[in-house]
Amino acid sequence: MSAPDRRAKLDRDHPTLSLRRQCALLGVARSGVYRQRRAANDDDLALMRRIDELFLRWPFLGSRRMVAMLAAEGIRVNRKRVRRLMRLMGIVPLGPKPRTSKPGAGHKIYPYLLRGLVIDRPNQVWCADITYLPIGRGFLYLVAIMDWHSRAVLAWRVSNTMDTGFCVSALEAALARFGKPEIFNTDQGSQFTSTEFTGALAQAGIKISMDGKGRWMDNVFVERLWRSLKYEDVYIKGYTDGTELRAGLAEWMGFYNHHRPHQALGNRAPMAIWREAMIGALPPMAVDMTLAVAASLDDATASTTSPQPQQQQKAA
Image (cartoon, rainbow, N blue to C red):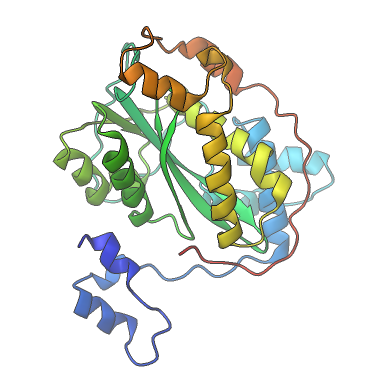
């Protein structure tokens, strides 16, 4: 049993066994079990929702510009608070900067392998990313693994913390169902640079690629996925807890993969491209990064609302 699976068996509310004792019995390091995050207050949740909406429309906004945008709407907030909430949400503005994501201490950073590479077939390159999702009086995190060529979402998982376990779980599910890619590309976030995640890739014989400094457009396809998901589903339905959210995500992901047409794919659905190209029914379609980047910066058209107050939930 893997370490993430053993950690999943921990019961923080066990009547007799302390968390430290459970870790000892399961052979899990206590230092690897994170303290539960304190629920955010309603003011923070409403502000986080608005920050997320603005960021989806203009993904180059950093904390300084975000403060100015909020002030123009009559929302007076200092930069320190905005920066704290953006960090909590895992939001990093697009554009050249010293570091795109912060790796964990001692984690190995792998070289970027996609420079000049023509991506013209499924399972050539996979990528992964994490996003924030608002629910009721709280929020959860979603990780998705995408096939770069077809844009198909191969696996996804939801968690109430940005730890490594749910990322490894999504990776294992994708490998079990769809084979393996030649290259797996991520940012330099601590979840993806962890020995658990990179070890799983190395064990499967997959080349590991990580975005370099300022390589903001390498994440453009997943960023477009997040924008579509939030404006077409999450913001419209206003899920109140993790159970509702997971059910809604399952429905929308099925629609996205099998029915939602993509103009860049000849108005075909991502999974149709993946399956047909895998059996040689379609000619290779190279990724046009220039068009993809331009499309990713289009304004979102959906209207926005504030979250309704509900109780903070945990993901299973």
